Image 1: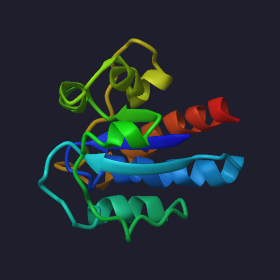
Image 2: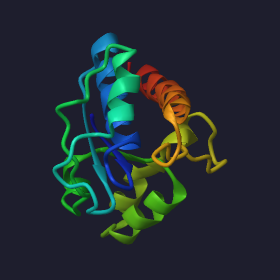
Image 3: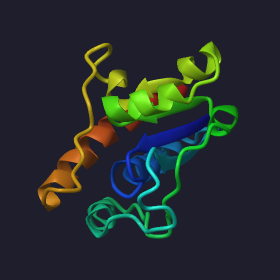
Length: 151
């Protein structure tokens, strides 16, 4: 299983989700891989936000080597599941779909916890460190459920 996590800039939520999911893959011994990207080109090649790095370090997850990248249509060929953090990311990725098979891969991350409710992972970028903790908790719960479903 190839999993892609997507947010806007690929420096906060999606690299956090990639790191958390990677930890779950190892914890559950899954035959899966995870990557992340952003829908915008704002932070290509940049490290994750320092607050994202700091937050995940508390949970023994290191995302400091991650570098931001932008979503590419070829990602539909590489990934089995594409989890997006909010409805704007969802719309941006759906605009890039080439067929129904592509569309079926794209889901809001929190739909795994709250099916059909269109709940989003709030973007902590403009907030304080507490927002990153909240983001961690939401993503961790969703990634844990994904991992348990893959066992």
